[in-house]
Image 1 (cartoon, rainbow, N blue to C red):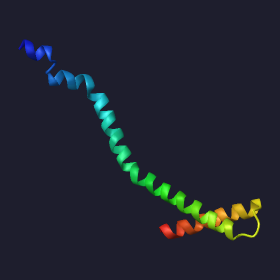
Image 2: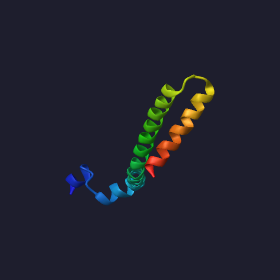
Image 3: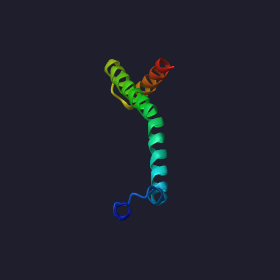
Length: 84
């Protein structure tokens, strides 16, 4: 019995002292797993927008602010249309 006390093998006491940390950590892990595909989807969409915007800027004859804004809007529309 003395060995059990020295090694702190009383699992109920350990659980009682650490249950909030384990519960919050578990919920955070589950929530992160849930959000992971959404984050990956957003990263891919941002890559698509930047690539399409670069293509539109290469095709435009001038590099003024209006062409940059319009190329971003066109790229956003194209990438949204492809993902749906």
